Structures are given as structure tokens and as C-alpha cells.
Length: 338
Ligand SMILES: NC(=O)c1ccc[n+]([C@@H]2O[C@H](COP(=O)([O-])OP(=O)(O)OC[C@H]3O[C@@H](n4cnc5c(N)ncnc54)[C@H](OP(=O)(O)O)[C@@H]3O)[C@@H](O)[C@H]2O)c1
Image 1 (cartoon, rainbow, N blue to C red):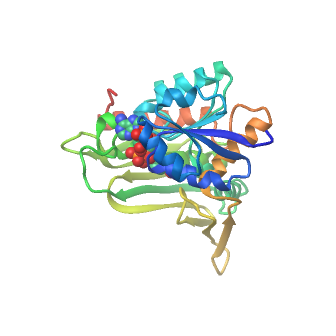
Image 2: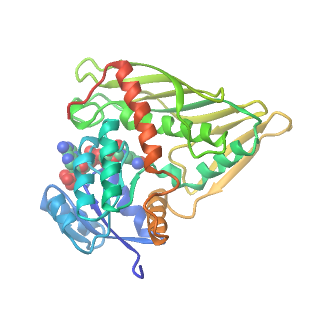
């Protein structure tokens, strides 16, 4: 791929804009086209991002022969339809999280991508940042002894708006799908690292939460997950605050505090407190590029090796994560007809 991997984006919202901006600094990839439900929105976006081709529908973007890989960035309920369409068009796929609003849809997406021979990755960008690999390696090597407890929270303070996708059920609203997917994926990754594996599944999961009185999606929620090797995870998420985004890993021989587990920046740092050390150790993990360029690079690198999965976030990992989200939502009585 002399010119790099050629990307198109479906949707022109917040995260599409961020991806389009970061990919300019990718070492492997470049944006060639944008697709929007409206031609004029696509035109505006294309003009802003350096004259890429503008398509007035997602179908037109998928019919563009110059597009090799797509970034699917509409609200979650649209991920299923457009991932299936992208796979049918032979495009490789980086699809925003959560991959779908339910595990059975995600399973279908994974199967179709596999059948069509295209790569499919759920866009958990933090998995592609070297901080995540560094944390996993510290846990695997016993830097804090045996891992016992994981704390992971992703909660924001977003004012209620029944029409916004954060709270609107038809748009996949609710904190568990949008934000809780991060702490769940982080806990499964770190509990897996303790056993030298990429991820493991909880053997027990107890979730609670509060539903919004108007739209009936979860506005804040907490859960305790138990993993087979005696690790307990305390997880929390929510759109209705209070704002807290952090993680901690507690072991028999120390503690790791991670202030930016899910959005690590160019100079990510965390603190390692070993029980037998007088002083805490500040560990810096510089990133080789902007966060969303790293996931584009991970996709391009895998394709260049002839692979159809990205090791940092495989389809099997996605399906395990989706099963936990299904369980959490079921325990709260939240369902999505969309
Ligand atoms: N990885 C991350 O850091 C991260 C951060 C934020 C969000 N996300 C994920 O990215 C997805 C989009 O989130 P966002 O915050 O970017 O949303 P957003 O700002 O609301 O943008 C969504 C875009 O999707 C398109 N769209 C298609 N059908 C739509 C519909 N029925 N209603 C509204 N928009 C529709 C629209 O683009 P057109 O009108 O141009 O078609 C819209 O601009 C979600 O699945 C979310 O979980 C990921």
C-alpha cells in the first residue's frame, strides 16, 4: 500500500471529526472520502478536512472503489446495518463501540465479516495505546504481586436531553452501552493479563443502576464482577455524573493508579506504588501518534500482515464484552427495540 490504507468515514458527528483530524498524523493511513446522510453536511466536512470526496449517503461511500477501509461512526443502533453493508462491499471495518446494542447482533456482524474475508475491529482506541500494553505487562509480570481488585469508572456529567443519543433509547442511549463498555473491557483485559491471556470473562456479575424516568435508559450504574482467579472488579459508569474517569489495580504487593485509562494522551502517565518501595514510581508512556491514528495504524498494520483481526481488540474480545453488557442491561431491565 504505497499510498497508505485509504479510509472513508460514515457519519460526520463528534467522533468522526476527531478520527478525521487524528488520521492526518497516521503513519499508515489517509482519509479519502466522507459519507453523510446529507450531501451538504458531507461537503462541509470534506472541505474542512482537505478536499476528500464527499458522498451524500453511506451507500454511496461504500460504493466508492477508492475506499479500502471504513470507520463506522453513527449512533450504536446503526452499527449493525452499516457493518453488514460495508462487509458486503468488501471494505475493512473499524466500527465504533459498542459494536452493537446487543450481543446477538455483534455475533452476526463478526460472522459476516469473517465470511466476507474483511477485517472487523471494535474501535476501543485505548487498547491501541502503549499504556494499555504496559499495564497488562506489569500485571502479567507480578509488579504488584497477585492482582486482587480492579476499580474502573467512566462517568460524566451530561445534562438530561431526551433527544440526545446519550439518553434517547432509539439512538441506543444509556451509560452502560456508551461508557460502561470501557470499564468492562478494561477489567476483562487486566484480569486476563494476570493469567497471561488477552482477556478473561467474569464468572459472576452483579449490576445495579438507576433508570431515567422519561426515556428508561440507565443514567448511572455500578457492578461487581468476579473473575475465576479470585479477582474482583468494581465498575461504574453514567451520564448523570458525578464526573469521574479513572482506574486502579490493587495487588498483594502494590497498587497502580491510572488517571487516564480510556483516553491516554501523547504523554500518558500512571503511578506504580509497590508495597516494598519507599517512593511511588511515575511511569510515562509516550504514544507514537494521536490516539485515533493509533487504531487506524493498528488496522493497517494487521492488513499489511495479511491478518483479519487486530490483536489489541479481537472479535472474540468484543463478543465477550458484549455478553457482559447484555447481562448488566438485563439485570436492570433495559432493552433496545432499535
Ligand atoms: N471511541 C470514542 O472515543 C468515542 C467517543 C464518542 C462516541 N463514540 C461512539 O461513536 C458513535 C457516535 O458518537 P458521536 O458522539 O460521534 O455521535 P454524534 O456526535 O451524535 O454523531 C453521530 C453522527 O452519526 C450520523 N447519524 C446517522 N444516523 C443518525 C441518527 N439517527 N441520529 C443522529 N445521527 C445519526 C450523523 O452524521 P450524518 O448526519 O453526517 O450522517 C451524526 O453526525 C457512538 O456509537 C459512540 O459510542 C466513540
